[in-house]
Length: 78
Image (cartoon, rainbow, N blue to C red; front, side):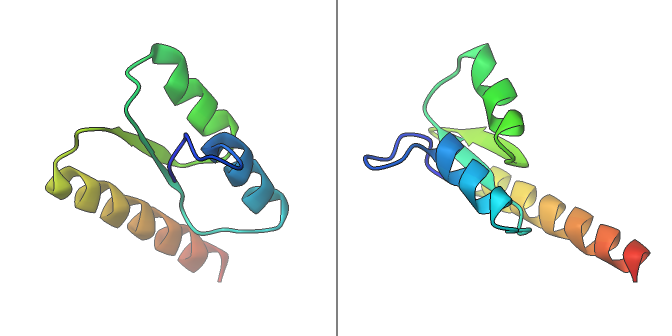
């Protein structure tokens, strides 16, 4: 999720997705290194964030980690 989109920022978009029941992990992509960005990311319902410029391997590993966490939690409920 890009945090700085023209119509709706990523925080608001994520909040709306979560309100509608969207369960897929959301990762923020940001150029900001401000400390409060992480807090806002998690408060808006996103699962993690990565800063630009980023290493594609780091992005892949974060995506993989959050998919595995989601799958593990779904398997506990079943």
